[in-house]
Image (tube, rainbow, N blue to C red):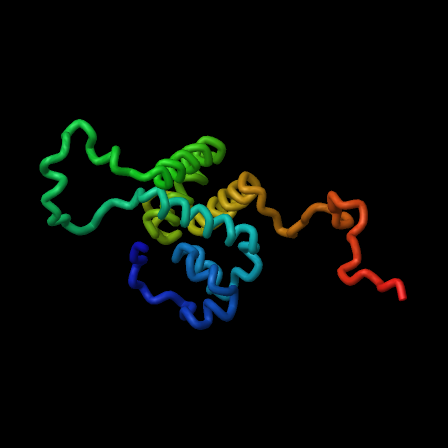
Length: 184
């Protein structure tokens, strides 16, 4: 688990669990702040939140964050220099990176950049707008477009729909009675 920024979020953890459930606590900080602001009711729908949560978890699983501390482990010194530590990555990390690469190819670059900045680097919307010299409130719209496309790619929709309900089928023609009637 990685540490998020220590900036005070407008929603406390208890209110977070009560309001949208435990899953909201796994959302990126910028999405949480966007939900907490009073004027944005209904701006992000539940399928957008689930898409943001899933992509943030995939980024975490892919271990793409840079290290911010020094490693005092002496073991990497004796390694073969040609591997650069990539051989030590697990299959889970590699699968997550491949999934992110496939998603990045299918989403427009600006939308993917905003999603990566928010979900990986914990940047705020104002910081993204300043870095890219975008007008105010434009990163919020790009985030919404990116989350909508991400939700479509992941098969998420505003309304949950399932298969039509069918009668339970069995390989037995008819279930035999548990206690056969006695012939008295």
